[in-house]
Length: 330
Image (cartoon, rainbow, N blue to C red):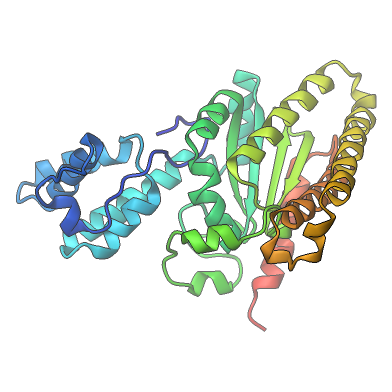
């Protein structure tokens, strides 16, 4: 698990598909990690309360377990005790990984001189969210190398655009509150979802410890591309430190303009080098999909230039108001 400063669910995949498979006799194909997971899941239904509690605590902290695998085990478990405990484990693993209080995150960032990474979406980290956020949660934010990089470089915040809970209730009746428990995305869904897609439902802000925005990204991005954006945000943060406060927005925007020019040149080169690809239907061409994702990145960078140097809190507040209005029943 990650510490209190960064977010993300875990890594390595376990190839268990049901509780029966998980708790049965180890097969030749099972790795030591599979065997350990099987043993712990079986102990969740032990006759001994102490043993059940012990197994649950270990599973809460066990590295290398994808939330999707635990969810699959929960769905196929025959024992109500096992299902209930796995549900608690899944929710606690997600909840404990991200900051949800902006003030506390900024305080933590000041203490460690780290960037604050705010992932703003429609839905909570441990509940039903939009499709893109669910995808990010189970792929991008479950990548081992990205997890390690983020742990070192940022304080992560999961911001729910649907609003803050008031006395246990949302400030408005929202459509997402009535949705069933969300399952992990399938391989087909992951492949079909457009890189850079998702629009304003998926917003990532990188801020200084004082809450000033230095970079912004919109949409779904796989781990490799997302890691590159984290590195760029770090470069912007370093540039900001070397710039007088009054000139900071202009300097950051100028840097983004250079990046936009480079991306535009890359898009043009794709057309020139692969003209045959642009005659194919969009879903059948990886080149066309790449070309489109670069266009979405340009849009995000232009928005980032407008946001450079602004305070993050008012920006997030506006998103909450808009999201609540969109989600209200008429």
